[in-house]
Image (tube, rainbow, N blue to C red; front, side, top):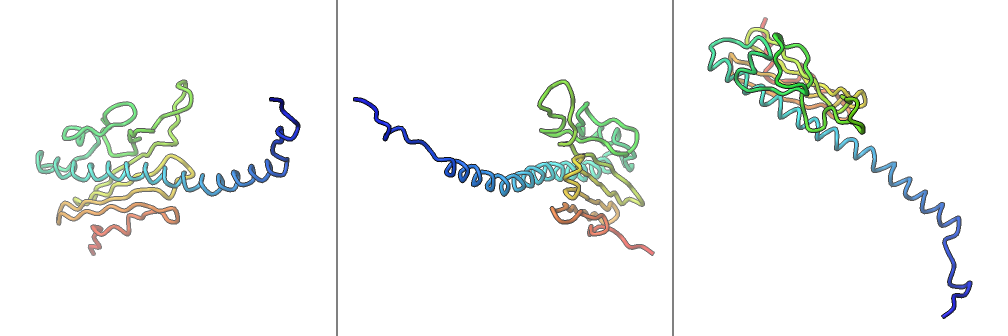
Length: 178
């Protein structure tokens, strides 16, 4: 059986360009959606960590009869992991939270923290406010805020969206004492 020139037809340049154009359009639509879903997943993981911290603060007060004053205090109840091990700071200043993708890079020679979230806690008159923000500058609105009022037992947690940052002022357990 011999091959003739009629059977060796390929794609024309126009067909190839049309295919590349269609793939490019699909990628332009799909990639931002993918990024958004990845950020929401990281944000949900951080929200779960802040919820755990709310419970840990209440447990510390129940067990110790004192208000926690540092990450090291909370570590006595439940270890909060950072990329370098349990949080052991003697204050509630910003720490980097450990997560499944925090610190991952294409090469093992360096650490990339753009996948990480950092958190801090503030206390005022038995009202704890917790904040977490992404270290990725392109994910600035995907923050998480929470509060825990030990005087009345109320708590709340809010997550930022693609369009707006979550604000501590919007939390329901915030008091407006005179």
